[in-house]
Image (cartoon, rainbow, N blue to C red; front, side, top):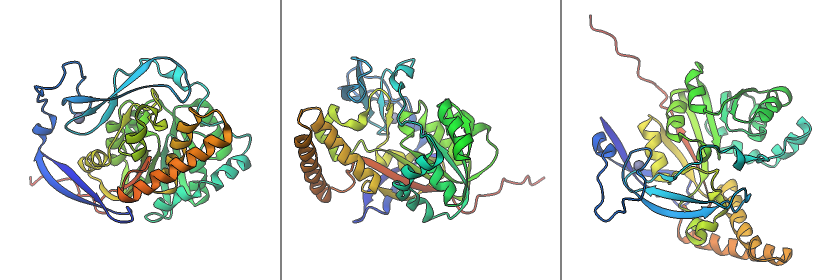
Length: 344
Ligand SMILES: [Zn+2]
């Protein structure tokens, strides 16, 4: 069996991506070829078992739930960035959640109004149909999708969010700590599957992508938004880059690696960008957070955060594809090959 290896060039507006594909034998992809110069102390890639290099060590600077240092490594073969070891019990690091549950649907809608731009990459391909959101939290995107006419299903780990989604937002919400397993149990197909900054939290992201691809209807689209480990902000701030968010973020996919994973699962990339509204907001937030941790005076750190952000954006013009977020859309082929008929 052949697997695609991908080289990516972003065009000027980063809306479309051009990929050059060469094929290698799958056996080569999975082979673990020890590097003579590599330390024996680095763990192998959890996806392809190849040699990895140490990338960065960091702490929980965002929530300060622990003083532990967490190590990230990058696979030399497939590019996956992974945390190792992963704590056996992640619950202490999530206490308090990510977003307060609104008191009412109108309160949620007021928040959703500010994030309607997230529908844009979906509406370019689908105007309605069945939509599944994985990791919706309180359901800001799910609410907008429902209001736009989609039949929305959601999968989330948090029981309070599931209750809010079912009883207040009015979408079908399934509680699960293992979306890959839940996707395997769902029989229906979806026109849209969306994962907004969810994949990096999951213990088996490759399995989630595989199952999501299997659950897409012909012509259906998969939206994956993740922190961009190839961002200018990470290269400049390193361990202090806010969106490492250790230890809650377990995995990071460089664009090429994400495209390769989706292609292996039969999907074609139709959009990749690191300069959409969300990615720009994440870049601004990265600089503001960095300034806040170092400058005690509120207004001064705000100004420093803005100055560094605009400096970084200026750099980004010279080096495309380096905002703090990556938003990608993949599409299932319109015609799925029928199962082979026996000649007997
Ligand atoms: Zn790998």
